[in-house]
Length: 216
Image (tube, rainbow, N blue to C red; front, side, top):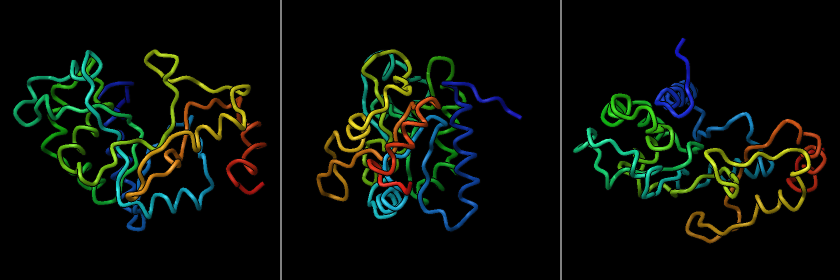
């Protein structure tokens, strides 16, 4: 059994295996990657409708100058992947079946990441953003559906413990921004949030029926 290491290409290999197994069920049409610290921000029917009716995929992809963006590019990847094509983004993706199949069958771009994107390259933050940007930019929203708080800086987003979880915070996660969905402007930009610790479960269960319209 291969060990998965944070920031390494083994994380992308694990994601591809997860997708490959999920694709075996032909009824699966949308694929979302979560972590153990993710929570839903809406009830199931709202999330399902948002995903299944979307005309776009949700893989965050953007240009980032500096050492944690373009500085991670490996010139050995050229000319197949140029520095102009190199993208960064959150690893918490949502994609449709067609793109998921292309990800697991990719034999052109992924081997370059396996060979050259090592050590501080952080393949999990660059492979999917780069691959989707090159192959499917017109079908991608270039944003993630998972809300995170980077305001405190550092290499990891902020954690939410019990006292951090309030109705006001949850409402901010649910509707605190504007974005585009199927050609229209909406304030429903995030369906999930992280990093929420187990200590917050009690308060989440208390607020869920009122804020997220979960069944009590």
